[in-house]
Length: 374
Figure 1 (cartoon, rainbow, N blue to C red):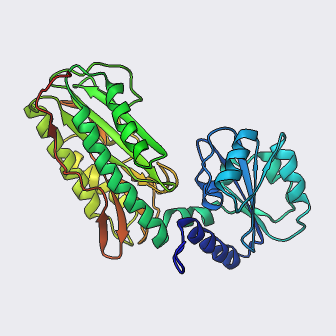
Figure 2 (figure 1 turned 60 degrees about the vertical axis):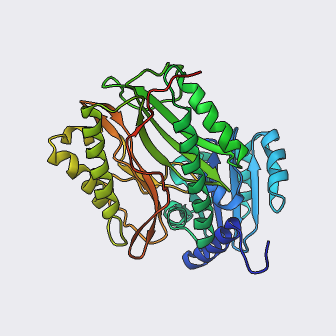
């Protein structure tokens, strides 16, 4: 480390120590698994691939990490040499025993909603849910975290160019995924959440690759979410194999207007609901309000960071305030009755005066000329 320059992990631990002191916590217990590992990674900087883990964070900044998979524990010991890592055959019993010896000093749990019951039950009365404290730290990033996110955004753009060039008539969808993944892995991306879809009005969403052969006139959609130094950034784009039809171009123009409206609503003091409403109102004005409901779509965007899909979720019933330092993707992804499922989304950092757009790929309905696989 250059003298005076902190890593993202060091910045996170410093912020957590300050937040614990302000809230009066002497200890925190954080849980994670392969699907939900951002809370644990905030202190351990370790991405679990198998099993489950618990971390005990002390007010002095020290961390003990328990993992119930011995191979994962060995990997954590190599990747996180500054942590005390313990392999365990009984995660609940071993951690509960330690918690039981902590006495009455205030202790918090996060994320409380998925914390194993045996862990919370082992604590003394008065210990509580610290999820909101960690959530805010996860949502509002330190400058060192934002630097890693900017690097990830650059690779997201380059990855989409690889994907776009790979999309040709006669290829199977997994070939596009393979080329994109190969590029990412060769450039230091150790994880990438990626979905794909292809077809016409029958296309209802994105999935892992199915082996479908790409055809002329297909709409090919993807979201790429590469991870750099633990931080995920996402890009969503749509291309057409051949010349876009009037229906496809008209639908894309609607999605583009909706995304711009959502991004224009991003500012400190707004809420997640304000952003979602701005996007959805564009569809409603075109008589397509049904397609912004849960029957056709999930969210109109979401937070990004140590997890590829995190808080705040951009929905009209989510009143989470938007703050400077948050990282979001705004994407009005949904089904269109004339063109099929379409995606368009850019990642951004919330600044004091609006959005800093991270992904720079043109907001175009790309036409891949109809070239065929060789």
